[in-house]
Structures are given as C-alpha cells and as structure tokens.
Amino acid sequence: MISQHSFQEMLRIEADQVCVDYNGTVALYDASLKLKSGCICGLVGMNGAGKSTFFKALMGFVRPSMGTIRINGIAVSSAQRNQAVAYVPQNEGIDCSFPVSVWDVVMMGRYGAMNFLRIPRESDRRAVWHALERVELTDYRKRPIGSLSGGQRKRAFLARAIAQRASVLLLDEPFTGVDVRTEKLMSELFLQFRNEGRTILISTHDLSHVRDLCDLVVLINKTVLAYGDTSEVFTPENLTMTFGGISPEFLSGSTSTEDFKE
Amino acid sequence: MNELFISISPASLFLEPLSHDFMRRALMVSALVGGVCGFLSCYMTLKGWALMGDAVSHAVMPGVVVAYALGFPFSIGAFVFGVGSVALIGFVKQKSRVKEDTVIGLVFTGFFALGLVLVSKIKSNIDLLHILFGSPLGISKSDVNQTIIISGIVVLLLLLFRKDFMLYCFDPTHARSIGINTGLLHYLLLSALSLAAVAGLQTVGIILVVAMLITPGATAYLLTDSFDRMTILAIFSSVISSVIGVYISFWSDIETGGSIVLVQTLIFLLAFLFAPKYGILKFKGSINS
Image 1 (cartoon, each protein chain N blue to C red):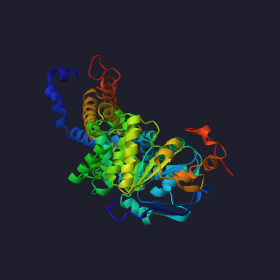
Image 2 (cartoon, each protein chain N blue to C red; image 1 turned 90 degrees about the horizontal axis):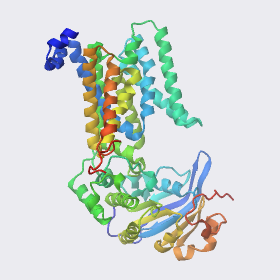
Image 3 (spheres, rainbow over the protein chains, first blue to last red; image 1 turned 90 degrees about the vertical axis):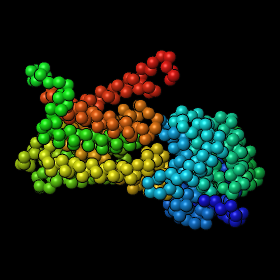
Image 4 (cartoon, rainbow over the protein chains, first blue to last red; image 1 turned 135 degrees about the horizontal axis):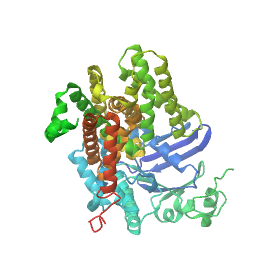
C-alpha cells in the first residue's frame, strides 16, 4: 500500500551486497542498490547478466546466499504479504488461451487483499474499474485476454499491478511487441506512478527507452557495475563494459549475445 | 432382449433400470465421480497435467492390491501410492538430469508393473479386471461409501481453493509475488488429483480414469472463454456422459468404463467439430467468421 505522505525520503528498494547462486553457479554477486520512492529506474544488462535473478530476489523467489534485501524498509517476505511488489510479465510468459477475461486478470491483483475465498468486495470492484480506466481498457473488460493485441495485454497486466496498489513495480521488457499508443500511454503512466511515490524498475536491453524515460540506470553483469543518474551512468564506456566489450550500437535489441565471463 | 425393446416405451428405457438396486447405485456413483473428475479436469487441462493424471492413476495400482490383501480400505492404499508416486517423480526430477516427462513415464510404469506382479503373487479375491477397467455395476456398499467420502473431500478442496488454483494455473509468478503459497497449492492440487483418480477407478478403472480427468475439461475449453462457464460445462458434460454410459452399458451389455469414456470422447468430438468459436467447422457467414 502507498501512503500518500512520508514517502519523500523513504527507500523503496535496498539491496545490500546480495549474492545469489543456483547449486553453486553464481548468478549474482555483491549487488548493492538503493532506490528511493518515486523513481523510474532502468535495469540494463545482457541476457544471463542476472536481471531476472535480481527480480526473483526482489520478489522473494530466491533467497540470497549472502547479503540482505529490504523493500519499504522491511523484509521481502513481509513486503510480499503487504502486496508491495507487483511483477508485470513479458508477453511471452503468459498463456494467452487461458479462459479469463480482462476483468478477471485485473481482479487477480486484488487477491492478496481479499479473504480466503477470494470473494470480491465493492471496494475491489472499484479498484479494478479504476485501474482499467487508467490504462484505457474499460471497453475491453469483458473480452478474453487472448483476444487482445500485445499492447493491450501489456496494459491489462499493468492494470493488475495498479489494482494491487503495489509500491514497487517490476517490469520485464515492457516495450517489446507494443504499439505506439500503448507505448505513449505507458510512458505517461510511469511518470504518474513516479509522482504517486511508486518505484518502477524496468528490466530491458532496449537502450533508447531507458535514455528517454528513466531517472536512474542500473548496469549489471553478474553484479552492479554502475548505477546512478541516467545522464551520468549512460556513457558509451559503461555500456561497452556492460555488454561485455561489444559496442552497444551493434546489439540494440539483440538477444543472442554470448554470456561474457571475465 | 429384442422382445423387451419392442414391448417397452422410451420412458421405461430410462425408468426400468432404476428398479434395480445395483443400477441405482451405479448411476449414483458414476454421476458423482463424473462430476468430481469433471470439476478437476478443468485444472488438469489448463495446467497441462494430462500425463501427470495418467501417471497417478496407474501408480495407485499396487496401493489397491496391498490394501485389499491387508484388509483396509482400498482408497487409503491407493491414495498413499498416488501421492508417493508424485513425490518420487518430483524427487527424481530434482536429483537427476532426466527430463520430467521421462521421469513421469518411468515412475508410473514402474508402479503399475509392481501392481501387476503383486496381484499375481498375493492370493486374494481381487479381480484384476475390476481394478483395471472398473465395474460400477458391481460396486459394493462399502465402496460406495468410500467413493462418497473421497468425492466430498475433493469437492471441498476445489471449492475452497477454486480461485487460487485458477490463479496458480494461469500465472504462478503473480500468485507467488503477492504472498500466496504456491508450493502448498501445487501439492493440494496433486492430492486432489490422487483422490479423484482413486474415485474414478471405481467407475472406469485405472486404465481409463485419465480420460475422466481431461476429456470433460478439454471439451468445455473448446466451448467457452470464461473459467466459471468452463467449470460448469465440464461438470455437466462429465455427469451426462457417465449416466448415458451406464445406461448404454446396461441395455447393450457392453463394458461400462469403456462406454462412459466413449460417450465423453464423442461429446468432445462434437465440440471439436461444431463448437461456435473454436470448432473446426465454423459456418460460413456466421458472426464469427
């Protein structure tokens, strides 16, 4: 939940020397990061650099073998119960033939706040309606999720995060496969979220959107290489380092970059 | 038989069997099991657990044999082995590099083979054919009671966790990120599967019970885009096919399990051909074209 006051100086995400390994294979080491409330932050790195591992750690799916993570000043598991973290999946990560309507999907954002049987109250329905309004999908609420375009589907999942009233939003490649209208709407929404005190972390290798939209950038390759204001961190040297010695101009949008090891 | 058909009216075609105690019992049990399996089949088809259903239903075989031999309710033995097989599949998958579908196939055939060996070795009055192919027309009173209890538990589980299971099938990542215990849901759904397989074994037997656990869900999936409607349609088609199957079996003296599953398959075929939106024969000029 977001309280309208007192978020000015509050830390939304606090990662301190986080290490994650899967059965001895190190996915992330010594990653430290502090994000205040009300910022848009790009998480940039190549495939296998640990972006999704970092997301998983923030959602509490993997436990760091060393270091600590705090969300809104409390442990990840408690933040989870407070519905503090919302994950907006990549379009490919969703079963589009699942028999649910747009309304149903957005309502899933309310599940955590509902009772055991997940029976929606009037307030839940209002939250869903309001969220649909913000992403301009009210007319589509009865449509099956699979009948939407890629961009509309992305908006539906964004609406779910809004309905959840999460203060930390994790977005996985939000700009892939999205139409111009959605792109514009999403950018506006992200700015509104920032003003509402939410913190948005965008995992991507789409550099142009990061440059235009993000206040902060985190460059990672198994660890946090650099982070700070976009204008300072987003330098050709840093990017070359992030992408393992390859100049970023050659790999805009490329996904087949080989894993780089020092 | 022929004279019988000539002398009776269509109404008595349905009513006459009801005068037999065993038929009333068979119809009741088949409809109940059909409904329960139909309910669960929605989750099985959406989660992609058809092979898992097949595995669990085969794996209960040694449990049934051991339970009969030792003289305790067959459902307990079956449930233990059903859940055991699932745990074993999870364990082997985690500890070895063998792919999941291979592990599933490996474990369930192993269990099933153990069951066959046990039946041939343990001297008892178990009828192998009844376990393999079911025999709702010959079901005993105590078996009816067991089936009612099992069905009750499964229905209760599904009703309580209906929405959570749906979310778990659709988007487990989101479920987990809002603090829902997806590990628990996973095992609850597998337990429900084991129990439903045990119940289904009564009517269609071990070999065909997987049909009860997927066909109604698949049929309903072709007919609607709403999860609630899918659930209702699956239960409805499953109950109807169970009842029709038992009737056909009674009047034409064919194997009951086979007849129930055939009716289910036939209904699926109709949906596959004629479903308004997802059937392959969409009528030209209709609104959907």
